[in-house]
Picture (spheres, rainbow, N blue to C red):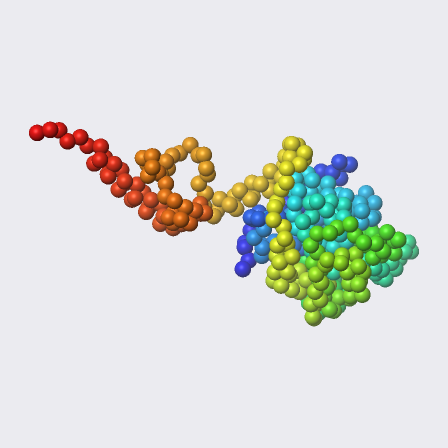
Length: 376
């Protein structure tokens, strides 16, 4: 069942003056960090973030959405920018999810900060082998032609729909919000798209690519592909398995390259199961001593509001004494086995009224026992 909670956008300033746009959804439990694919943005995760109860942080990758372009068109540069943004948000333990380009960035980020990435979920990630289309588009003459042709393509909803349904998905039309994002800024999308294609092509043929060496990440890994994926070949699964021997792999029949659109509910369940090993959200580090950023404060505020909607919990050591605190010594508390909540401290419906009645009865008994009978 979907939880209707809106995500809020914030800009995170990087050390070199560039900014990354992040989108925050409140929730409870360990957080998810979500990295999108080519031509998408953090808004593409909205349906999934609403379907899970966890706090979610989606990042507009450099050059997409409202984020500035990367300093260099390499996966390492993308991962460095995302790591800096997450550090500003003081997210120190999270489950990391990446799709397509975002999958490759997630893999590079997990290798860069393995102590923070408690579990890794990769959806048809690039970076584990060559992608011929990216290599062709990255050629200088083709790239120059693409810089002029791409705005024309993105400005035409019919062309965008045809390309999306034919090559990206298995005959699935783009959702209206995605189509709106694609055609809203056709000129602004070109620099980021060309930089990303260059990074994808380099990652596929570089001697240091993931396919050529074992990735230095030993945490839980789950990966999925669509059986009809026309963007990232299924042959890349073998390279991913060599890089992550611990990975759990699934191939979904009838699906193309965009599970957020084609299998949204199933994807939410897959991510929840894969992220289950994450047990903590934060660990004490020197970063905790730094002043909190505006985005970090906003994330905490949203989580506090979400918790408040479920009803306030009684805090230990509060200044307001309870009825049990005022009871006579020796009759003050029941044993844990006798308490209605079984000793867990959880609120049980009606238990407050029962405790109040029991307390009043004990007060009457105590009062009668203290009466002094005068001699006749």
